[in-house]
Amino acid sequence: VGDDQAWSFDNAVELTFINDGVFQVTTSFNAGSKFRFFTSKGWEAGVNYTYFQNGEVDEYFTPANDGDGNFLVAGESGTFVVTVDLYE
Image (cartoon, rainbow, N blue to C red; front, side):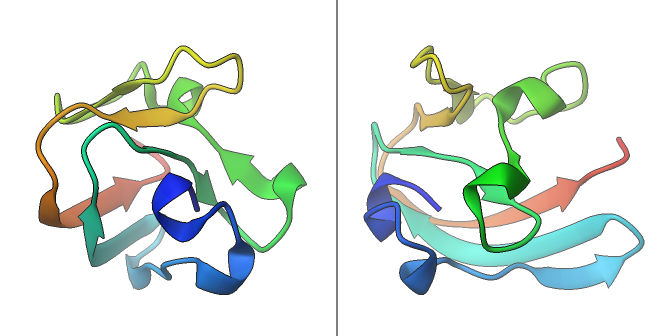
């Protein structure tokens, strides 16, 4: 959920379960937009950039430095395959 979904859970993009802790989605991002992942609907379930910063994060996504730990889409707008591994 983020700028591209008007920060609304009603517009959230759902990731597909791949295997234990691994999820994937093909979705569009606008350059400069901010977002974070959620494990369920509700602000308390947010999984932000700081959760992943010691793992592997594509250079396309950087910290938003917005005080909330969101991701920033640092590359060009487009459609991308995003894989999230909650254990890596």
